[in-house]
Image 1 (tube, rainbow, N blue to C red):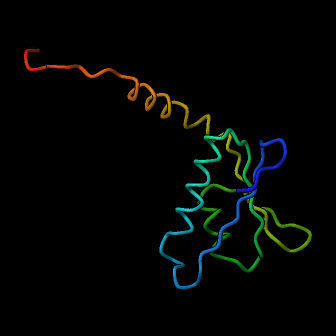
Image 2: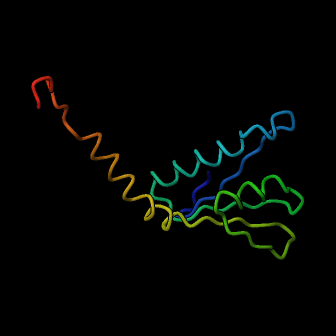
Length: 111
């Protein structure tokens, strides 16, 4: 991921060599990059792909990226992380509360 100077937008790029395509590695790479971007407070991720890179285009489409054809013949995938982070808030808050929860101690005498 390469961040723009304002650190609110970032470009992602990934390559999976032919022998390892179709095994879910691209999905893992992009998913992990999205999580890192969210943790860093990045608001928008984008990727530029050649129009014949059907696997990358389908991967990003399936991961929620909006696709736009560019004048130079490439495809730009855009993911709005602000929306995703707002949707993830209840889940993240729940995880935070679970991490902060104190152990109950000895519960053998609770009826």
